[in-house]
Image (cartoon, rainbow, N blue to C red; front, side, top):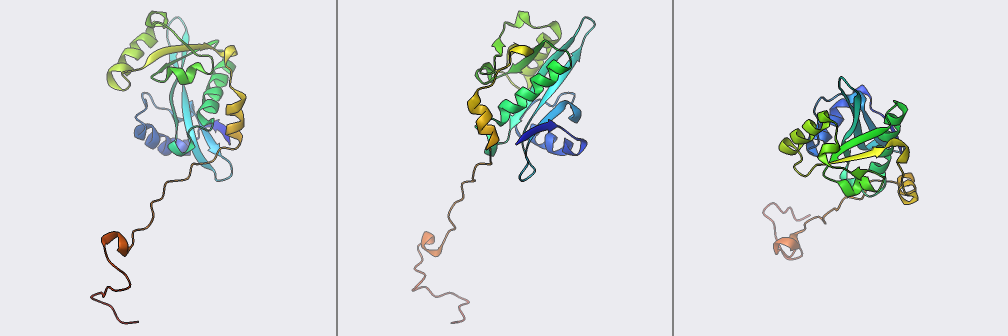
Amino acid sequence: MYVRDARNRDEAWLLDYIEAMELDETAFRSRDYVIAVDERENERAGFGRVRIHKTDDEDICELTSIGVLEEWRGQGVGAHVVERLVTTARDDGFEVVYSLSSEPRYLAQFGFERIEVEQLPDRLQDRLTEKQESLDPDAVPMRIETERFRMSEHLREAFKGAHPAEEDTEPEEGPEDFGIDPDEATYKYDTGQ
């Protein structure tokens, strides 16, 4: 498993899963995303986005649209996506990163702190209101100083061996499921062979 920058050819895949997971696709640009990929099968497992809000006073960095495909959950995929996003923000000169999320406990494990709405920059206060009204009514403001990001060793190890969960396959239905005794039944088109 590894996390890489999204490419142009990932755009349709990203849009499909952002819509399916009902995530925020406001001002979508595929180049803002990172994607977790299983190198064995070249299968995409998760994604997330760094969104920069430019204001007259300062640029503000928000992590948004973080998603992990269901069969890849619980294996550190999301953790590594968040780590890559925070690292990207730090490398771009941001000391603080924000997220407006309905999953504050998930982000808290990495050092994100829940803050009051009034502590958000004005642009993100407006964005939080928009997000709560249209997409995620339970979204709350979170922030982290990029140097304070941490990840448990458990999630690092899980990511190394991540693989898609097996799909639950139902057994194939047979004649017995419909009350038919296959040894005694005759069929309209039975050829006797």
